[in-house]
Length: 211
Figure 1 (tube, rainbow, N blue to C red):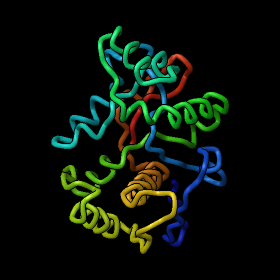
Figure 2: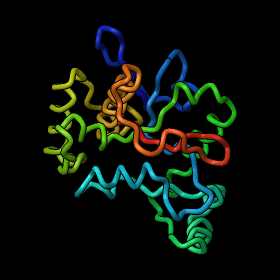
Figure 3: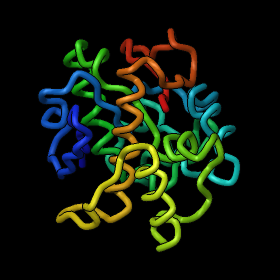
């Protein structure tokens, strides 16, 4: 899913099949997926550690990024066992994101020009910024949490009438809009970067989270 914001503030929200399709015609794209992977899970990426510290009560929303070796595994049992040999297990929720993680990784490694276009972001950090630096603790899948997030987005110029979209969960729509706001902040030079700006994985991919 992607949200694009036109110069007049109009939001174009749609479901796309690939990241490559999402990148078409954009100068800045923020994605809610890891970019850059460590070789071993300990220590974790610095940007994740910093992100969790900024989200008290919501730190679990920042999933631990798998190491590269685990990312290559095709079953949860295999990935979990391999990761455990390096000191930390891997939950199923993270494993279910492996296909998308591999897609982003492959595209970023194949086209280095995308490193100046595609940035890693996190919707809960985006919402916290909109909320004066305080994490939004209400659950996004519950009516009160959904309403609170919609109000925050509207307050910051990202109002939308889209509430349902075929092929997307309701809360994913709001996450996409929140990450779109992060992209506009990055483009304007106003976003905050977590993790050392010169930190790279062994393939030269940055390991930062923006909000």
